[in-house]
Image (cartoon, rainbow, N blue to C red; front, side):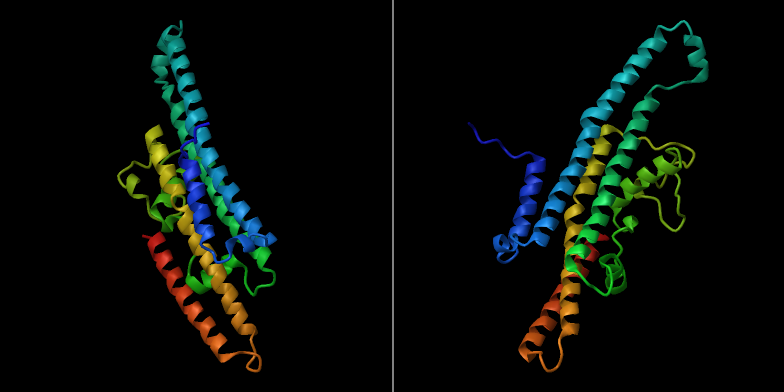
Length: 266
C-alpha cells in the first residue's frame, strides 16, 4: 500500500507533535498522566476546530447553495412570481446567513478550547496562588480572551458577535473596541457578507493563531511554576547555584513570553 501524503490537518498535528518532542525526556514525561492529559486535550481540541471548519465548508455551505438554487427555480416558475418580485426577496440571504453562522460555530470551538486549556493546566498544577487566567493578566497584562488584540482572531470574533447580537449587521457591540480593518468603510446598516473563499481564508488565519496562543499560555504556566518554586525555597535549604539557575531560567522565560505576546498582538 502506498504511503498517503499528509493532508493539512495531518501536517498540523505532526508539527504540533514535533514541538512537544522538543521537551527534554519527552517520551518519559509522557508517561506522566497530567502531561498526557494536556497533550491529548490539545490534539483533540485542534482536531475539533478543524472539523467544525470543514463541516461548514464541505456540508453546510453546499447545502445552503443547493437550497438557494432550488428556491430561485421555484420562484421563477411560481404563479406568485410577481409578488416575490415586489417583496424584493433575495434567496441568497440563506447562503449568506449560513456563512455568518459558520463564523459563530468555529469561533465557539476556538474560544472553548482556549478557556479549557487554561483550566486543565490549573487542574494539573495543584495548589497555586492565582488561577492561570488571572496570573496571565496580573503578571504579563495578557488576557487570552481579549480577542481584539490579534487582528485574525478579532475578525472572526467580530463577525460571530455581529451574527449573534446584531442580526448580521456590521455594528460594534462594545464601543471600546475598534472595527476590524476589513469593515472600516462598511455601513452599520448593511449586513456582513463573506464569500466561501473569504470564510476559508479567515478561518485559516484564526487557526494559525492556535500555536502562538499555546506558546504564550504554556510559557506563562512554566513561569508561574518556577516562580512558585522559588518562593517555597528557604535560605537554609536553598543552594545558591540552584537559586541562580532558577533566577536565570525565570528571566529567560519572561523575555520569551513578552516577545511572544508582542508578536501575537501585532
